[in-house]
Length: 395
Image 1: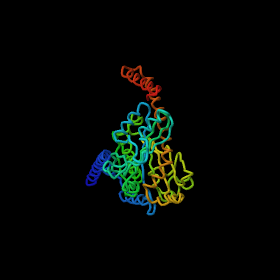
Image 2 (image 1 turned 60 degrees about the vertical axis):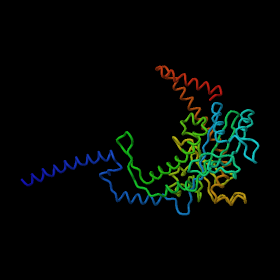
Image 3 (image 1 turned 60 degrees about the horizontal axis):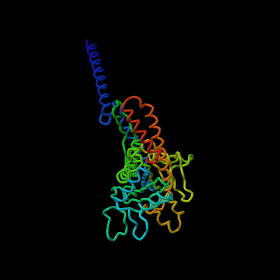
Image 4 (image 1 turned 180 degrees about the vertical axis):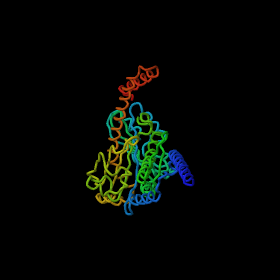
């Protein structure tokens, strides 16, 4: 009799354990970040997190600095008025006192009228709060807090295409954000997918990569938002304001970025967090050793973003009078910006052609489905109007 009672009790206990496990799994699936997995081994996870945190740091003596982020906008015949309005809003339609006889707006108008081509360097742009009777500069603007100043240049690509390149030079605190986020200790965590029953587990390496991507997006988005707000053009209208061509400059010590195939096994793990472990398309400067530019490195909303890097110690190859700027990030960035901006303008033009090709493909697809209702016919007429504007030089 006692044996039968113990068997019934054991059966009831197994049923309760099964029900509790099912409830535990169900609640865990809904709140994976709050309710741990029933079979979670905390000791093993903690030991693995410590190991990954230690092996993915930027080592003492190594250097990783994000010094500048550039963003570009292009103006065709239908967008150029927006460019003129932005210039006049900031009072940039005047010549630099004692430096130039031409103001930027008059220069662009001459280029678009006579088709000469070239570039106009507006120069450094300070904050509105820096205006003073003792300051000879004419160029000021509201600047996001992450940046020290702006560096603005205008390029006349063709007679009807004007490109504006704005460099956002980061302040001392912002330049270290990549290194700080990568060196910050993190833990493995679970993240639920919105609208789905499942979830994903992010270990330390994935968490650090996500943090680095957030830093990249933060400064890039601030730069693109500034252009979209003050100088909207083709990309602001055609890509929802978040697909501007952009570029960042990373200064490193030692030369870690984009290692050759045979050296990748010895490369530090943190390169993967910034997509610096390999390059799909890499340009290396012959005139400035250590300067590298990677095109088409990123995807999705960062597909127009370019990564450029410079090995600081290679500043010893500069002319003797320039070698002293190696420890000054602002002067070093200014010196490197010349060749970088030229590449960036060509990249921006390529992005423009990609967007135009995408728009034409979308028009073609929408035309094929235009017979499915009144709404589709209205969309067809709108698209035909946009195609007409494009081919007539208004787009």
